[in-house]
Length: 272
Length: 278
Image 1 (tube, rainbow over the protein chains, first blue to last red):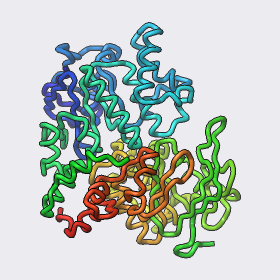
Image 2: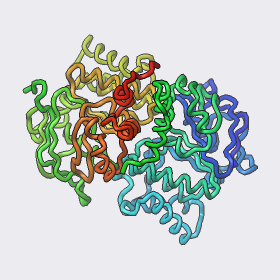
Image 3: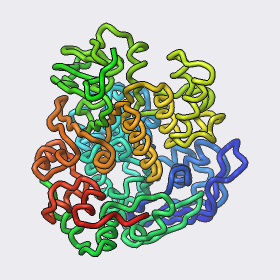
Image 4: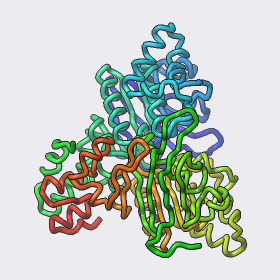
């Protein structure tokens, strides 16, 4: 379980706090979606929930971050990384820059945890298989398309097998197939007890993945509830967050006097 | 030479590109883009979309085949020259941004093209207004969040006033308002006769913003048509072969036997109702 309590955060060198009194619990095996307009504090919340802010980037945090009952204040970034990992929007931010191949890049995480070589290799292969990256293992990490780089970044996190995963727009550069692969991989992790927080603009992805949705605006949590409830809430549009296609079209059809059940049928029907 | 409306402003003939020691990223692309057209390129990651558009301003050169920009073979023209015709906004804005302020960043391109004085100021002001960055003119680009850095990269290209604007994943990281803004910018560019080519994975944005959709797979064009044609039920198997799904509106329209309804608007129109006003 990841627990943020009364968390308010200010970046180093800035006078104002950008997160205010955030209370957030991620239960084991729970996938929580984080939505909000641009610059509402989603990325900052990802940094704080992963402990990188303030442990790695400085700034000042009021309130506490607790992981599985253990306070994180004063933990080194190394000790934090064993418990919680964060994936960034831009895969180039995350790439180590020291690995010669995609395989090595993915292996760096478990290797840095001090795991035996055999275990590192096993986990690396497993992460590669989960995201179907077999064809890329010998490639130079610098010679990947944006979407491929993003998948490699996520595989690097999976290989560390953390108890808690925070992802900031994990599929921003992914095609629909890659998005689906990531969704399946995250679902499998949650089934094994990992808790996940995913900041995303793609509400269609969150709709099929999350049990709970949190909306933030101006650094505060303004909506928090079950996925279907939040995505049908008209206040979402006022925040500048687009409802998923399912909710948006169901409402449009109902407003037009049509039976919205066709939306569910079309979604269930598949397209192949 | 300037192409007349409807004439191709971009053309590739048998375009092949092989990255050193690797697979054929482009495997024979024949594409003709008319002046004033709004063209979306879709396809899987690694299907060759970014490789293709980088040939339009000479950042990449063909391994085989030809690229014609405004009627001239690009082979004889340098990037600096081609950039006066084709402006390209990268997928990753940080590959493009380097100036100390937002305003200086946006002014760099048009100044390089020889604009000065009031003409330069107007180009910069228009681009900042279109992207909603007017109040950030004095800000350091790296103090902007990702979504606004992305809009800044777009503004820098708009300010150059090039006849062709190429956008690599322009909606990445944008919220609903940001996507609307990009959609509006594409519409305004086309209304002024400029050509827009965009790469996108967002099928709804594609269906609602562009006149034409090209689907790429393994370095080739496998489908080319209007959004209604590209997302019609008959095209679904081809889309599925490259792991693309039509927008939900198209799937509902097909289920109701309404023909091809790639956008919410088309669906509700075919159902005989107008969109509820926001």
